[in-house]
Length: 98
Image (cartoon, rainbow, N blue to C red; front, side):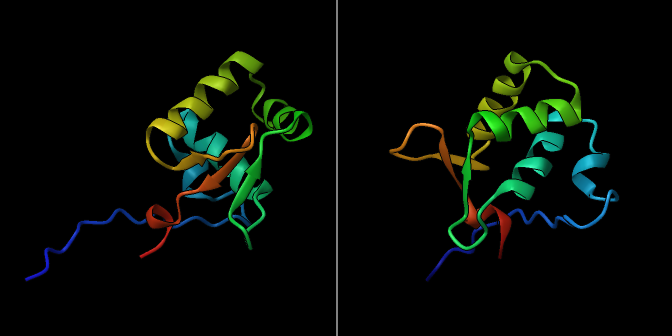
């Protein structure tokens, strides 16, 4: 007998400012919105390079320290996963899809 796992599904609309992520009171989800916009969706990889980070900081008007805290929160929540290459993250597709 197999146990059914409860999965959380996040539905994200990236083509509009009406994204549920941007409506969240949790600013970490605002960061996730911009990370998703910058992600290579074929490989599910986000590069946390200087240019990508600066774009997020400028859009959200946050400091580098604050952005790093949000990225750390996303890692703790299992939404992004560190890879063997520094500054490269993989989206946890088990969370984002059924």
